[in-house]
Image (cartoon, rainbow, N blue to C red):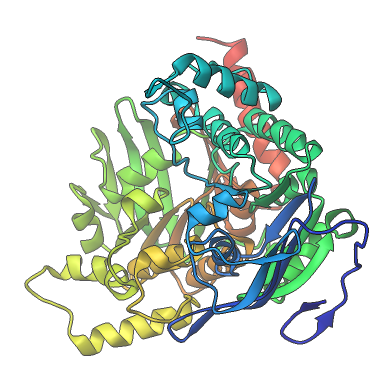
Length: 524
């Protein structure tokens, strides 16, 4: 049986096999906040099991409960039918449970074999037997169908190979369960297929695999069964082949799907009638970074920037915010010529920018939610004019509620929030400055569909209230969903601009491809 907030759902039993791992009614509370509430999970040998849910649903907490990182308040864990308790990750690994994280936690300046057998190196006369180590590593790699030199430095390989080596290390310790936590987020299509080849081999060898991903198409390609979580509770366990993507999304996010459908119905809506330019770029560019670009943002307008990786989207955003300095062209803010020498100058002129690199250029993990949220406002005031405690409390409370940030504790450390909630805090940081122009570079990258829905809705609402938004995303569907006008970029220059009058993803791709064909035909 699986429990939801409102009902109990019967899952078809599978009496032919015993789960290699079964978690029953697992509950974990942090302070007064329940992170997991009676969640159950069954993993069978030779099966890929997808763990689904939006950021903050409890996926990471459940994994950490299984692998001994978090102590369980109540509930039981059964390994091959016998109750177990893991107080450390080492204890979980000794029981055959290995985790491969999105960010590879191996040592790049050691060889592939040294990483695979780190701490378990074969020895001869007290010294590491390099030949035996390489032979054993090669056998494990060949078992997975991987043609990798075990004597090569790990850091010399792309991230995809490093992740496969991490999986090989897990297999070498005779893992019965391998947990893959967002393994494909940094991989291209060919690298994903190579990873999936390894996953299929493991499945054939009887290993149970937990697959965590926000990419629904990949889940449907590789997974057999899935468990769906929402708000720390079990929604349902399903066979993947018997569940449509639409049904899965509804189970994951509930009512929020209706919001996305409403935004899609508004696709192609008329642009705002205001003729007031808020920000104008005239031949703006930077040598080696961006060719001369013209762009105008009007009040209440969302301008979407479409283009492939390296097309110049981020470079344009950084020049508009003063994060990089243009060496030709000019900027006008409300028809007045301005020179932005720094982000501080941009903030003074009511321009805000949320970077695509949330981890390096946004999140300060050791500060609280409140401190992260108020950084930009305090910087714009200057450090000699501190924000009063009453104003701090009011602003933080207001934006936690407005953006549905979870947990609601303003004193929670930023590093403990899910990716989607971290992104909401960063958006709150800029909205608190009350900008006229908001530049969003990949604001929904790496977050779940529920958080994406909330952010997309927020963008539409801000524009309706008169804010100008420059929206950059690699996901053309959301660019077209939100934008009144679309700018297409390629090879660090603007190649096309037009109103979003029922543009399709295919239309935009044809513009990019058409430009590429034209360049091939006329290399001059």
